[in-house]
Length: 407
Picture 1 (spheres, rainbow, N blue to C red):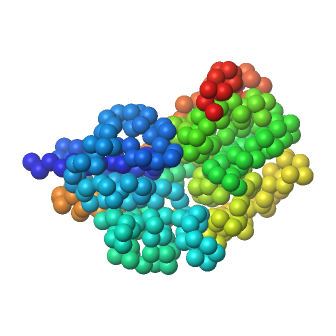
Picture 2 (picture 1 turned 90 degrees about the vertical axis):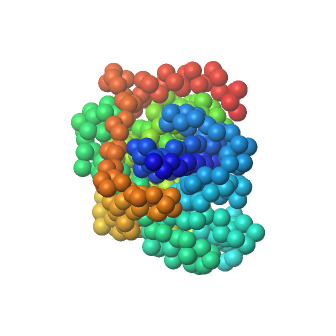
Picture 3 (picture 1 turned 60 degrees about the horizontal axis):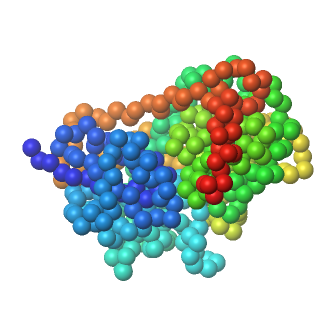
């Protein structure tokens, strides 16, 4: 029986999360051995822990670059020119919303779709570059036309998992510990300048002071890159202190998708989670949008033209009410349709590509996408009287005592 080796290159915890639904397509095949390595990256703190949570062994980077593999999977570009084997690249976010930090004015390419992401010394590094939407292919043609011949539109795994979970929304809400009728306000932040995280010290005190404690729960999702730099305990301590304990803070290792499925309102920024929020029926308030760093043709820019912006002067409850009254599902559905042009087909199309690169016959049975797992309860008891969460408050109190060592 033919045996092949696959290397999964995990640059960061976020990149590892993007790859989890890809290498899972190979796990049941006895012909395939999947290995993991952590590549050098500014934000790779937590990447090795991500691999261990998957049950995988971490192959040292120095050893990984000395060996040859039958397939390499990656969601980042750094160091891939040193890896031996045909590489399948995935985008590490959704919508290709951000502009590259390099270049000036009209010369700036879209992050992930410019030559600096796929070329090394003039040659294409990946054997295939997967994209979620035909619009991404068009954008790639603008930024790096040389890469069009290796581009393949396969859809988006997170899109498909969320879409499958939405009809069972009440099961996810029950698993989280939400009571019938309680409203979940989900705050989600990307990293870097212009993100909601940079405004937490002003947004969270307002949330604690203005949002009624009865009938509301709040949770915060922060991009794992922030925890990679500052430490997750420090992030949790800062957020919980600003919100006066009236907040559940999700760790970088926790699955954000069930929270999005369960949410009644989303307060977000230009990050991927906010964009996935357009798939739900939750009204969205934008608390951060650095227009100069955003691709004006992206679905993220379309969301910024559609969703109301969070005002620092108007009462928060009034803004949530206004967002709900102005919400038109068809407007947000049009944005969500730009996440994937292959809805429900990611697993089939991606597995076909992987086996083509491996040179193996694809299994005869169709892939069976796993259901989005039910989350652990954030609010296991209902004795805290409102917005706060026993689990989050207990963890935050421990975080405050040890946060200084994490900074």
